[in-house]
Image (cartoon, rainbow, N blue to C red; front, side, top):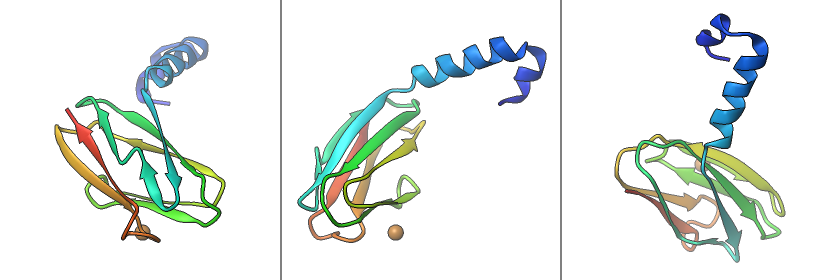
Length: 110
Ligand SMILES: [Cu+2]
C-alpha cells in the first residue's frame, strides 16, 4: 500500500487500489511450438500493462527482454503474469531464451 493510504480509511484505500488494478490493461499471448503468438503486441505509451503469457508447449520457456528488463521462466502448460510499463514510445523486443531461434516477439508502444 502506498503512503497516501495512511490518510484514508483502510476500506477506502482498498477500493482505490482495486480500481487501479482493474484499470490495468491485460494482454494475453501464447507460446506455441516455440513461437510467440502473436509475435507483436501494441500497447499505449505511459501505461502499465499486464501481460499474461500462456505456455502451450510441454517444455519450459523463459520470457526474456533486455529492453523491458524482464526475465521469467514459464513451465510447460503454465502461465505467467508479467507487468510492463509505463513505457516511452518505441519497439521493445523479447524472446524465449530456451528457443531464441524461433521464439521472437516485440512490444510496440505507441
Ligand atoms: Cu534469461
